[in-house]
Image (tube, rainbow, N blue to C red; front, side, top):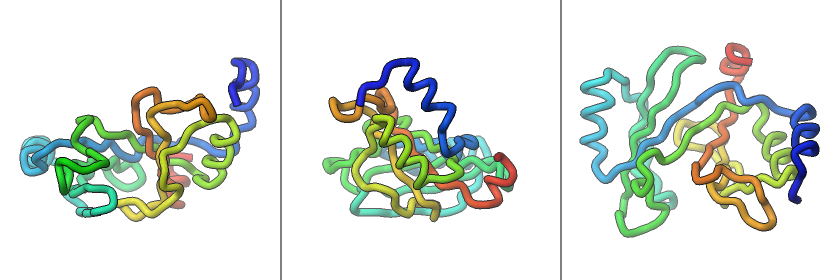
Length: 165
């Protein structure tokens, strides 16, 4: 699976999908109320939803800045159980989300290029979009990863594709 620089550059020209922009930034901590004081009360972001998942050990408020297709989520997250995994608070900048115009094709192509994905596959995310995650660490089988950063790929809805594509 390990590709040389020329192979990777040649493959990139045939990429069957596009990254359209930042969809979200997720921030983890042990006290969501304290984070909300900063992001909502002080900075003026609007809360647009909540998401709670025992499977993902998360209690999350979904905040928004911007409008329309240009809205960016800021998700503030705390663990349901501080002693369980995933530990959404362990890395304060938990992950970054990228709008993708064709998520299934992106996953197929990236996997063939040697990109490592986190377990879970494509699934419905907190904001209702299909999502998947690039693993933060590479492996022998999949030598390309987030280099310490968890990266979420998010299927862009038609209006975002039209505005940003």
